[in-house]
Each structure stands twice: as structure tokens, then as C-alpha cells.
Length: 246
Image (cartoon, rainbow, N blue to C red):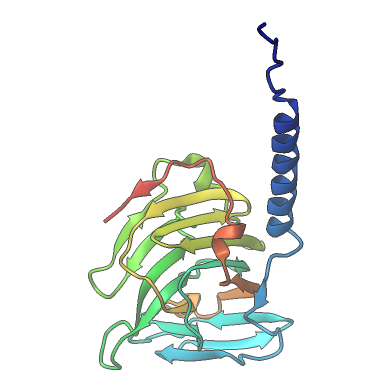
């Protein structure tokens, strides 16, 4: 006599899988928001934890901001750099330039000898006040032979993200060999390059020739914070295709 055996139901397994997905999604969302381990890099009062390197550009703290000032006839760039070094990170800050102030945000900056023409070599997220409008692009800041890694020449949306004379929010993710940049929530860079792996974060005051009309133009930075513990857990997706650059 042959017995009719019921096939085991898949329903409990599907229910279990569904519940697992819900719990995983909730945990991921929590990691993205409430539990993000942000660390402030700037206390809003003074430059504790930072050092000025390079030339004679000036920087001071006022109204909770790091204020940067170009000085005429400076022979080289000036940098306000963190004393600490970082590898993988997520960095956020707010920046404003009053006019034609040549500056940028350096990542994984490596110290060079004092006789070098450029005191730090690094990835530089450019703040570009020129009609070119490449703010949020990245170039290799390593001396007289610097070159762009990632431009915005074919990205009209990215070129209009930054506003001169207004506060602009930057989010920069440097995790492994991939760097992503957003300006005011608009993606501007998504690149792969492995030249720099660890170093300081720095703000740049560009060298200035005999141009006294530009000397009073200021740059402002505030709300500088970082995630350097498991930053990949808090990385965001972006709709720009990733590009490998040399």
C-alpha cells in the first residue's frame, strides 16, 4: 500500500526570509542615521587639532568658522591641516567663499620636505570660482605637475551645484580606492584611483601674486565632521557611473 505524503510547505521558510529582510533593512537604516559615529574635527572656538603649514596665508576662528585669508606675494600655498591622519573616511563640512578665492579640501594629504614647492601632496576636492565651475571635481595636488583626476566638463548638473557667496554642503567619501563627492546633495565625482591611501585632511589657501584686489576675499569653513570607523557601513549610493582615473 502506497502512502500519500504531503510535500513540506515553503510558507514558513518564506515568512522567515521576509522577517530577516525586514530586520536587516531596519538595522541598515539605523546604521545610516542614528548610530553614525560622527566625530567633530573643529571645535568652533580655536584651531586645536590643526596646524598651519606652508606659506604666509592667514587663518583664524570667528563666529564658529575657520576663516581663510589670501596674502599677496606669497611664494607657495598655505594649508590648515589636521594633526591626525586618516585612511578610509566620510567627511562632511560647509564652505563659503566671498568671491574669487582659490581653495580646496585635501584628503589623505602627505607631508613633503620644507624645501618642496608644495608642502602637501593629496587628492584635492576643488572649490572653483572660475567660469569653468568645476567645484566638486578632484585633482592630484602634488606640485608644478598637478593634473585633474576628475573634471566636471561634461556634467552640467554638477557644475551648477556650488553657489558663490552662500554656504555649500560637501560630503566626501574616500573608502579604499574609491572617492565620491557631493556638493549640496548633487553628485559631482565618482572615481577610482589608488595613489593616496592615508594622510591629513587640509584646507588650502592658494598662493597669491601681486593682486591686492583679491587679498580681502575670504573663505569660510564650518561644521567639519568625520566618520573614520567602519565608514563603508554609512556610504551612500550615487547615480554617477564610477570612473577609473590615472
